[in-house]
Length: 101
Image 1 (cartoon, rainbow, N blue to C red):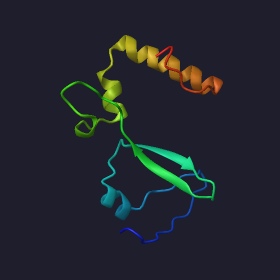
Image 2: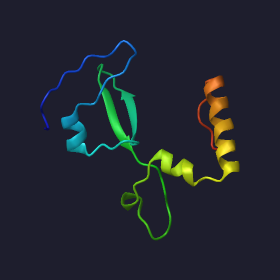
Image 3: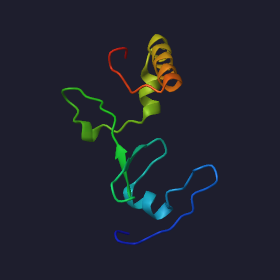
Image 4: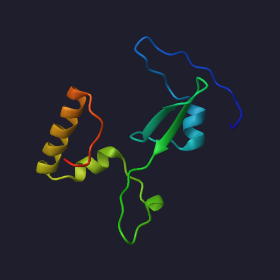
């Protein structure tokens, strides 16, 4: 797969599907978190991100968790606080802040 070039058209709504061969090769799964970084030369770097689920006995690399898994573990109060925090960020276009988290 490495070195092969695959072309895809960008849809009217701005969506594109990551080709199956790439998803299979890199073991992308439903719920994986991807980040997009614009590089200086009109290229985009796509990275699969890891959520930090840290404890003394489990290295981060061994613990694979999706954002949905993380949110489902929160208490109702924590879920409400997260919803309010994210809603305010989206409405105000603010950058993330750990002060209110």
